[in-house]
Length: 101
Image (cartoon, rainbow, N blue to C red; front, top):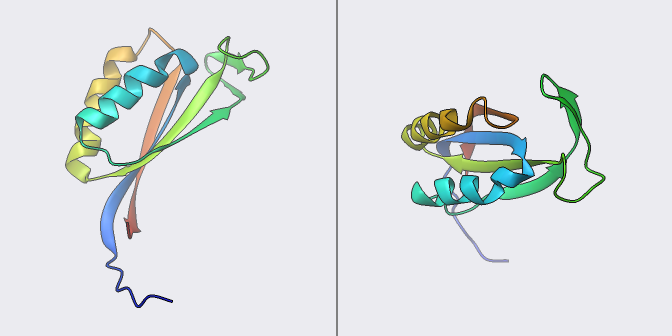
């Protein structure tokens, strides 16, 4: 086992849940803010935009994207996501966390 010293750092965990059609746009946005990694999952649920089923690929489906960023980048990403308000089903939230990566 390698003897690594891991440094715990403050970070912001952003979770974005939106329509699958937004996937490439959101990934491009994240990369424009130097995000080095993210996780995307197919999800289903129900909320203010109605029931979102994950049973037909690409139709009425949602994705969840999670990534760790700095506080400053989270502000900029949230501002950019506002442009999609009213156009697509989309919700984003963030938490202050501690992480090593």
